[in-house]
Structure formats: structure tokens, C-alpha cells
Length: 366
Image (cartoon, rainbow, N blue to C red; front, side):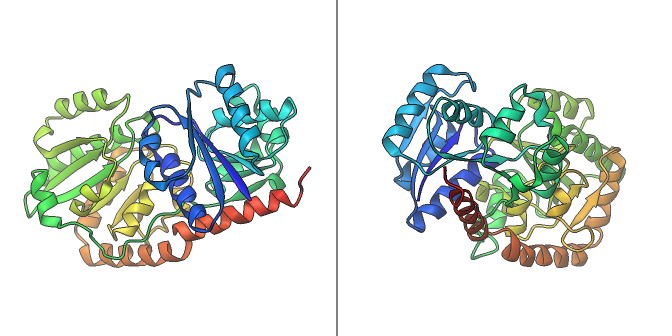
């Protein structure tokens, strides 16, 4: 079996991390692979040590003719059985190559929750060209079905995360000292790109209310970068909480920050799955997340974490207060989340299920 992976992401987000885990896992199982990824992307620098063949292209759009021609050359040379597209843009490129006569099966990953009908080529890409769509959650699967994709054409494969052999790989006190955290502070962490759907503004407003009503024992650490970072900085200043908020910027290695957290908050307004929560579960960090999208498929409210309704900041404020006042319950939930992680969300499970998808589409080879 030969697999060609396509990904046009420039930055390191959940999709790129999952592609890295998948390609590493497939390599360990002896599967031949070739990666076509965006030139000078973060993923390009990260996959070097995997010792897999990599081609870097501009991949500027699904109508990028230069990239399409070069991709066609890669396909002729590598002769993949399956082309696995990891985003909508590369699905478009692969679909057009298939249209002009290239013979391969297409597996298309779908991670995001918004409608595919915003793309005028959606039916050609998802219903005709793609042999099978891998949805990151049942929530995403149901959205695809609502948009007109046949249920038989979709398989759900949850993200996977490497299971840590130790709860913390780094010294917690040293990490907290490095970012200016006092020993008694209750540290609330949030990791994600600063975009509207990730909900950092909701969290900042909730945290402002929290600190003004409950003193200075709480600390907020926001990890990430993105188009709304400047706006969020202004909001933090406006709410007069600058002394209680730490902005780390983008971090490739979350081992550098996760051990500092007492609580991981995911305030998303829209979310296909919420894979950063899986990393939090691996560190056995108590979790508080919005009840939206695919998040409830990860977090079972009251059992493996706490879910809140994201309509109002006060809902999140109240959830954080309750968790901070019940450390034994939060610790038990974190332990239950870790057990669920081992069973359902490991990289090994993700790799095996993806292999099953590949085998399924190859049974119907042209």
C-alpha cells in the first residue's frame, strides 16, 4: 500500500499535528508514504526527522496550476494507491487531477464544522471525487450529511494523541516560575489560534469578571497566535487585567506549558472536535469546555470534565469558580478522562482506524 498525503496548512494546528502522528504511525507499520505539503510551512520543518519523502509546493489554491502540474509529476513517479487530502484546498487539486485521467483513490479528511456548500465545487469534490470522507467527529459527519453527502461515504476517525508515560515530563514548579506564576495561583490555560471561533474573547471577559469578584488568586495563560491576538490584547487592557494574564505566543512544544495549568479551558464557539483537549487529558489536567460542536464527544459533562453553555461569559465564570472550589472532584474527572483517552483517543487507535479506511476504499479499486 502506498499513500500520498496532501496538506496546505502554513501553521501548526490540529490538522498538521494529526498528519504528523499519522505519517509516523504508518511508517512504523511499514506503509510507503510521500508527503506533499506547503512550502516553508511549520509542518515542513517538523517532518524532516521522520525520513519520509517530502515535496514542498505553493498550494496557494485549488486552482493553482503550477502546483497541480508538479503534483501530477509526483503522482506519476510515486504511483500512490490512495491520495489522502487533509484539507479542502488539496482535495480540490486531487479531484481535478482525477478528473483529467489520473487513477487513484481519494480519502478526504474533514476537520471543520462549517458547511461545505460555501464552496461552489462542493458536490464535485465531496460527493463525486472523494471515495471516502474521514470526519473528525460525529458532529462533522452529521453536518456533511445535512449538506447532501451520502452517509455511506463518511467514516468517523477521532484524533489521536501520544500517551505520556509520565504525568508531567517537565518540572511543574520550574515551568510556573519561568512564566511568572506564584506558587498559590490557580492557573487557567487556553491553547489555540486567536480566531473568532476559538472564543478567546469570551474567556477573557469571563476571566475579567472572575478576577474582579474573587481577587488575584487566579491567573490566565493564553497560548497561541492569530488574527485576533491584537484585539484580545486591547480587551485585556480595557478590562484592567494585564497583571493577571500571560500571553506566550505560539508554542510548538506544549510540554513547555501544559504542566503549569491547574485547568484547561476550551471556550470555542464552533469546533469540529477540539483536539487540544486530548493533550490536556494526556497530562491529566482538569478540563472545562464549551458545549458545542464535537467537544461533547470528547468531554462527558460531570464525568471527564465540565461543559458550559458559551452564550454568556458568566456561564464560564461560574464553571471555573465551581471547579476551583472542588479540587478532589476535578482531579477524579481528570483521571477518568485519562482512562477514556487510553481507550478511544490514542494515536495507535487513530492509525489503525485510518488504515482500515484505506483498505476499505481499495476494495473498490477502479
